[in-house]
Length: 184
Image 1 (cartoon, rainbow, N blue to C red):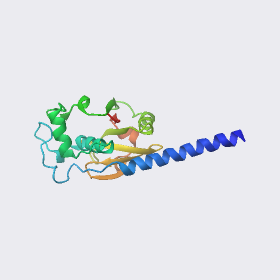
Image 2 (tube, one colour):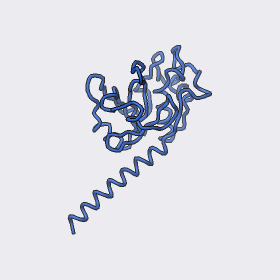
Image 3 (cartoon, rainbow, N blue to C red):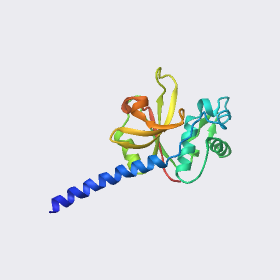
Image 4 (cartoon, rainbow, N blue to C red):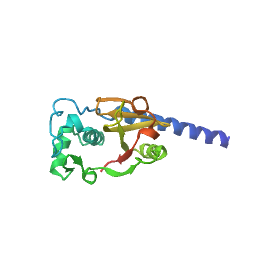
């Protein structure tokens, strides 16, 4: 009897984890960096715009909104500018509320177990990849959940929710950097 109870506990814990990830996926707001009215706004203090280079900013706005502080890419851009959040047009990680840390996978296979652990603990994870088909343009997407090593995401370039694996390929190969965020 004790063995059956133990197996049922593990089974229901797994079901609750899956439902929790699906719930998080459904509640993460979707923003597109190329959406009006912010797509032509200058990104930080550089010459580029949110529409052309603002994928990370757009992910951060989605994260802030998910955790209860409503932001759009436009208002997040303004907030970061007034709080030391940009060096030229690059985001200063330490200025972003809820930023916990990051790992560089540019020379090694991405540690998907670590990324899964972050997502399982309730963090949202922003990952850097490269846009197909030529893979020369860096791009940041927001991972919102996982089922094994299959990742749901909010993609700011397309302004939609999709699976990382379907759009960008093998996450172990095509994730070059990961940063995780929690409540501040």
